[in-house]
Image (cartoon, rainbow, N blue to C red; front, side, top):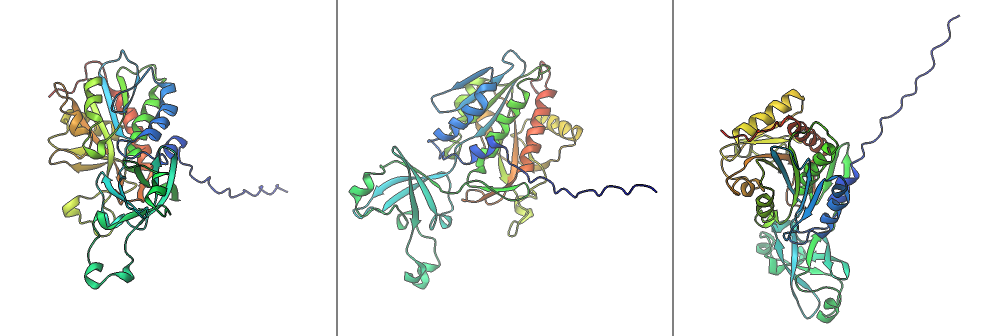
Length: 366
């Protein structure tokens, strides 16, 4: 008699775990101009693998591998995020603020926030007049900044000043969380997703003995207030080729007309920019690499300067062959930005393969 086949156990697949490097970066409190925590994360994960590791007066982190290689290939992702800044404290201890970077004012009130004081984190809540105390006209409009405040539970101005100072930066108190499969939510995917991506590419290439190009990953600062970190870092690196990695708008949600905004799906792979500000030779190489490696990608028409570090990098020195890779993101510049981490990984794989495709003298002149 034949032996009965052993019953196979249906072992459930292991749940997806986000990379520690990405999680640590997303959870760092680093509003624009105050990128200290994100800098420390980059230092921890990237400095050990870099042949040359530098920082500058703008707070950029510049990591290089294969420093004698040719061409010089620079990748940039910014580590700053939008935030608030303490502007005034009234005699009852209520804190009034200005914005750091672009905000939808309708999203600000009713949020838990972290004030980054010299003495450490101070917890607070953004407040405004309750709807019950508004007339019909007030209910129809978005409050102005001076009509909102931060409440830290202080009773007087003096009590508040014992804990915080004028000029202290503020971020939303919203940490990273996976909500389903590889889809995660965080307040600062813009642009910690890009900063992680470029640094992870460098980490994976660090031991590649066949790499011909010099590869430089730059974690840039102050992008949200005018691509300020990208400008001097690109001047210093003097790359032949550069790619800015940022987030782009996923439009696969209600109230996003593709006739106005294009069609971009979360989970559809990184978005490759194409237009007059994108070097055409670089763009074609990205497409060739993506198709050869069977990496999914999407295309975006860029009719003018992009809203990324690329617009600064492209114009430094005698000009740089520059491209843009974007990670599809929903709900940009809100406390709950949504990204499929599979798109980030596809972006990492794409730029690893792109860097390996570069040969001496590939300067992408046309």
